[in-house]
Length: 135
Image 1 (cartoon, rainbow, N blue to C red):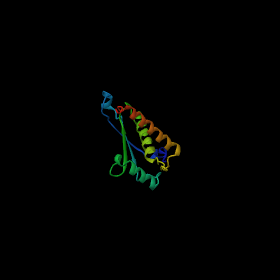
Image 2: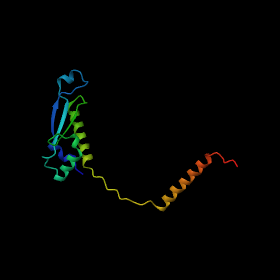
Image 3: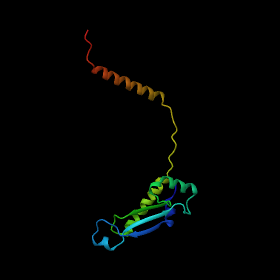
Image 4: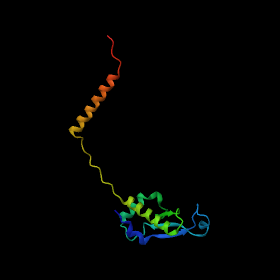
């Protein structure tokens, strides 16, 4: 699993005016923070890790395989920067997580017997719902 903390030195931040509520503050202050991370040119990632991130984050990358994340809901630039770094950390951790392969197992005899007993009980309940046969 990749530690996103070691990648923080390679992050590039840009600011812009954000839309939405905020009144005069929105018109004057650049509070929107955009984070850019250049995956192919990272010095801290191995080629295998780079390829994994590119494959798993393909929908979020530019044509040059640069990850772009932005945040603009907070009123201050610093709060938005903290939020965007938090998003980045979570995204990198999720993308680098390797799921264990499932080892197929056979059902135990007890579980088979339980299943059959349940089926028999259900069958009896349903047979009791039928109309009695008139002779």
